[in-house]
Image 1 (tube, rainbow, N blue to C red):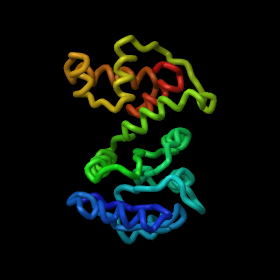
Image 2: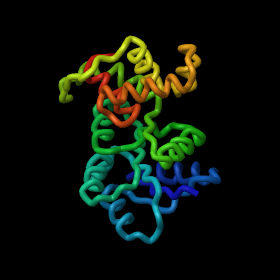
Image 3: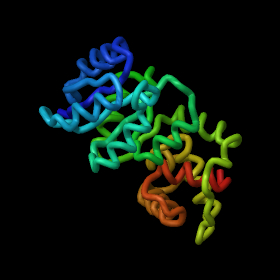
Length: 215
């Protein structure tokens, strides 16, 4: 069972997500908080083990991104998945830079939400493909907010193609089928892309590629 702390300033939203996750036999909401300050107090109280934090990005007193930064200061390493109703590209970037491991819209299905929690609990990073696609479309106007850097070694045409598929949310298997390659070959090429871009996961690879104008 994966224990979840649910953080949202809207009571009805918390109740809805709590009820939704109550239908899962692998995820359980063990604590709730109405803002970032309350969430930190709940975590520090340590009455119950928390595996994942599901947190709204827009809250009074201490919002999701500010809470992430405060958790970093306190060396609290619980993975955070951001939930939002906003199509806010800048917030996606800020949340990921602050350390968010996942980013989902609040209208996700139970299946998608549970799978996201399992993915992040396994140590991986996840951003809903729909958000990634809109992020790519919307980043053109805010590229100046990034600090750019040169790539030590240029990406090959095939690696750029794989990056575009990654940005669309394709798995290694889906990319292998699309490019008529083995999953092992795709996995090796993804590793090469991460090394060349100097990032540790696929999400940051896509964001770095957007920042550098590669896709």
